[in-house]
Amino acid sequence: MFDHSDEIRPGKTLLIYIHNVCIICQLAEFLDKVDCLMGDIIEVFPKSLESGDVASIKFIPSKPICVEKFDDYPSLGCFVIRDMNRTLAVGIIQHVDTITTAISNIRMDLTAHDRKKQAKTYLGK
Image (cartoon, rainbow, N blue to C red; front, side, top):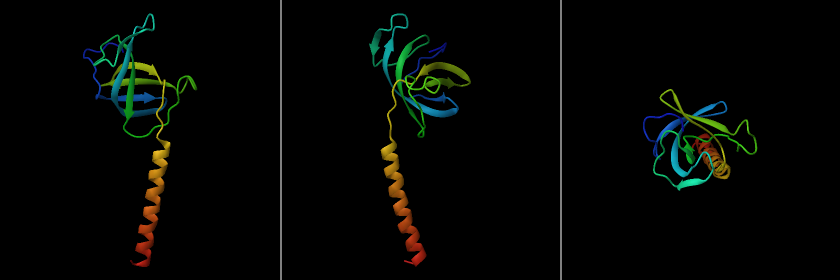
């Protein structure tokens, strides 16, 4: 985390830039705080982050986006966190929770429902 006057807590919504996408994300939780020199975990599930901290965070985008892990595609696995026209942090994507099956099921259900609705309208029922 770069120079920031306030501490950041889970639940805050910030702009996250991932390759060519700018999206609002909520910081869900801080998984751990890491010593930047040694790479050791200093604190697990810290309550807040301050300027100069290195941490693993979990964030939830406001809508589904396509991202890649840094290990798989380094050029696509980087992000920048900004707030009020200031860069707060930069990082890499270490893990991605996928929701593709849930989204496809919802789309299929809505499509089937829409077809029934259209058929009833067409038949005058």
